[in-house]
Length: 242
Length: 242
DNA sequence: CGGGTAGTTGACTACGTTCAAACAGGGTGG
DNA sequence: CCACCCTGTTTGAACGTAGTCAACTACCCG
Image (cartoon, rainbow over all chains, first blue to last red; front, side):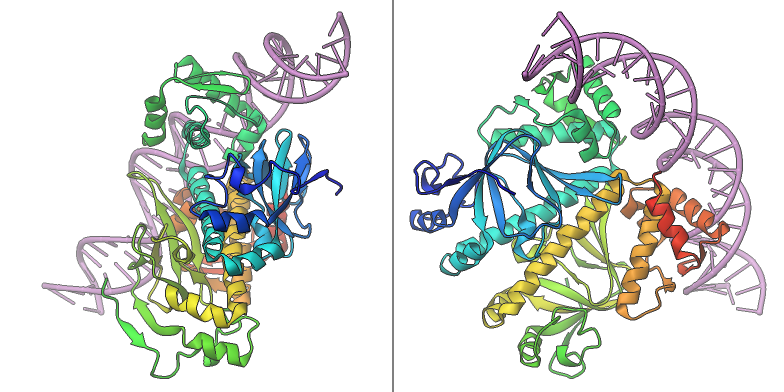
């Protein structure tokens, strides 16, 4: 894989001055600790829309945090089946498989032109010896990964299609808000097929339900731009006993 | 929670002499390392069928490995929805939420009378400083937990009911084999409702499909006892493009 | 402007759920 | 020891949700 890399020496990419500082790894660290962490992030990678950041089975040597753009992770099974297991936005960390496996357990594909910070495995181990809070941070990340996929299981296992879509919209609304963007107007980065796949639905069902929500005045949607018009209605849908 | 505990002082429960040694935590450790690990397991807990080992939201202070019996973990959502996220057999470790969260993220309920080894959080941290391989072991466990739930996502998101049941049977067959039991005849510990819930199906659908598999000669099933009669047929069902 | 991709909508089908009834097994008490 | 109950399981019939197939439309990019 020959991806263009940008050295850290230069300038702007330095954890201490990163606008995502509060969201990314350095959460809760002192200035000194962030300094140490910054030595971990030696370079960034740019990948174009549709390209792979890493592939299932590929040797896992680093974890990544997103600076700009977005990425989906998906499993591919025998022949046809695939399943998207997550969408990652700026400030979020992916590739945690690298922490204990030799190889990545999923494919990571850019949904748009994307830039990620690279944190090499062995550097992580090294630095975490001097920054105990980093140990903890990594565990937290692993744990939130487990928690996230359990929530998704709950969604796929027991919710109707409308409830899944509503949950999805509310989740993204919340995550964009957390990023500092508007929680009531945002841009979905993925197409209908990806949304459907993620939620265990077809793209047609996804489209139909989004249209229905629009017709009922809960949202306004055109292409990938979503406006939440009636958040309570969406919450009601999720909470209604089918 | 007043669960009967048994001291480790006594005798038989000692990692070095445990029949599950090869499956449980000490995988790949030297005799000396196992000795150290054994000091971690200070006691066992017995829980009866239907009782909780731990509850969602409860303070998480330990992880557990099963000595005998079996346990299911499940999430409970607003009012009615629940989702079983895993079934655990002897030698398998659960409660990993404890590693970084203050509280457990799921409920753990015994499917039968069960006995578990208790590994206290703070002891784990302490010992893992002297047994680096333990660090790694813990990461492996977290990772296999993620991997497992991703496989389940793939199952719930893209497989038809018959494929899910076939996958389920093959998975359990493999795990019992790994435990040293027969891979073609084993005892499901959970009822049809639990199987269905786990796989995102109703108990009726589960029952119907098991009956169908029996009619077609793929399995013999009565109550919870399963015999695999035609493993290849089950594999075919999983691999068939719906 | 044209071609290709992404999204929408409709009609039909099928899979799995729901509701209901009957049945089997296991344990308890008379 | 049998009658009884309770729980878990099986099976049937009707229904409804989401999938499939297909046609059409909107949008984006060269």
